Length: 607
Image 1 (spheres, rainbow, N blue to C red):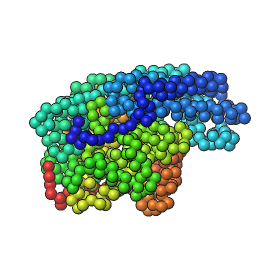
Image 2: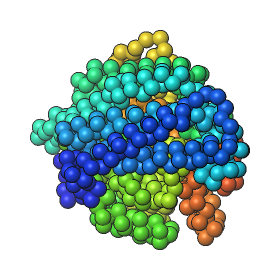
Image 3: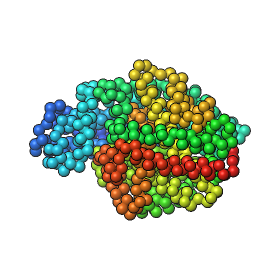
Image 4: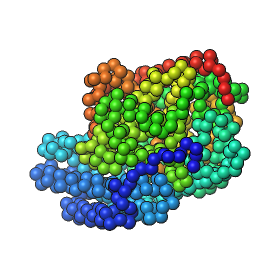
C-alpha cells in the first residue's frame, strides 16, 4: 500500500449481485444459458445463416424483428454477468470463484458470438433500403445492417468461424487472461527510504509521479528487474495473441490486422494517415518540451524515462482524493447539471474503486453495468494526473449515461469514439485547474497536462509503431523477448528522439500495457490519439457556443454506435480526413508547449 492509498474508496458490487455463488447470480446465469439455448433453436428454425439473398417480404420482416430482439435480450443479460465478474476479477485477480465463474460466462459468450456471426452472414446480402423501409426496428439499426454487408464479406465459412470462436477461449483469450492475472499479482522488491519493501507492480509504477528523483529512479530500476524476470511467459502470451490475430485476418480476407482494426474502429485509412501525419509533425515540439523539462530538473544528459512523469514546479497543495472529488463535482456541474449529477451519483453510490493494492489491475477503466450505471477503477495518486484520470474515467460513465435507452447494438461504440466524453471531461478539469491556479502552481499544472498530451501523441505513436512491427514479423515467426525489447526501444527512439536520454528508455513497455494482449482489440492505441484530438476539436466548438453545444453533444454521445466516426464528426463541421483538422486540434497542445518553455525558463530550477 502506498502512502496516498489510505482511506481511498472501494466500489460496491454487492448491489449488482451479492457474490458469484449467490442465488441471484446463479439464477441470472441459468436464465442467460436458457435464453441463449432458445436463441440457438430460433436460429436453426429460421436458417439464420443462409447465404442466398433473402426476399424482403412480410415473413422475412417478422423473422428479422423476432430474431434481432431475442438476440439483443441475450446480449443484455450476458453483459451484466460479464461486467460484474470482470469488476470482481479486476480488483483481485486471485479470487478463485470469480475466475471460475468468469470462465463459465465466457463459454456462454462464445456461443452468443457464434450466433452473432450467423446473424451477420444472414444479413450480409439483404437489401438494406428495402428492409429499413418496411421495419422501424431495422431503420433504427441501419448502421449495423450496412456494416454487416462489409463484415459478411470478411467471414470464413460457418464451420471455420465456429471453430475460431471456440478455440479463442484457449487461444488469445487465455493468453490475455494470463497477462492480466500474472502482471496484477507481480510483487516487486524495492528499497525506499533505506527500507526494503515488497510492493505490487501498480504501486511501484505510481512512484513514477513521486517528487523525489531517487524514489523515481529506484522504482524504474526495480520495475525493469521485475519485468525481466517475467519476460518468458509474457513473450509467449504476446506471440500467441498476435499469431492468432494475423491468422484470422488473413483467412477472413483482410489485407492486414490493421485494416481489420480500422473497420472495427469505424474509420478509414485516409483518416488514420491524416491524423498520424499531423501528429508526427509535432514531434520536434514535444521533444523541445521534454528537453525543457530535463533542463528544469537539472538533467544535463537528457531526460531519463524515470523522469518522464516527474512533477515540475510545486503545487500549493496535493490533490487529495476528497479535494479531487469536490473539484470534479464543481467543474462537471458547471458544464451541465446532468454531468454534475452523474459524478455525484458515482461518488455517493460507491461506483469508484480507487485504492492501489496487491492483486488489483494496474491503470484505470470504466465498466458499463446496466442502464445508466457504471463502475470506475483507478489506482489513485494525490497528483494532478490522479485527478485527471478520475475525471477521464467519469467521462466514460457519462457517455454510458448518454447511451441509456439505446439498444445493445446501438450502444456498441468503436474505440475511436469511446474516448470522446473522457477526453472532454479531462479538458473541462484541466481548463478549470489552470484558470484558478495561483501563479506558482501554473507551471506544475501546465506540465502535468503536457505529460498526458505527450503520452497520447508521442507515446501512442510509439506503441502503434511497435505493434505494426510485431504484426509484420509475426507473419514469419515468433519473436523472442529480446526482440520485443529491441523493437520497443526502436519505436521509442523514432518517436521520442532526442527528447529522452537514449540510454534510459523503457524496453518492457510491451509487458506493461495490457492493450497488446487483446485479440479482439488489436491496435488499442491510435483510438486514444483520435479521442484526444477529436475531444479537443469538440471543446473548441463548446467554447464558441456553449448553450447550443450541450444538447448536440449529448445527442452525439448517444449515437456513437449508430454512425461511423467521420459522419459524426461532420455533424459538427469537422473533416477528419483532412490533415488541417488534426493540425488545428494539435495547435492547442503546441500553445501549451510554448507556454511551458517560457515558464520553465524563468522558474527556479529544482530536482
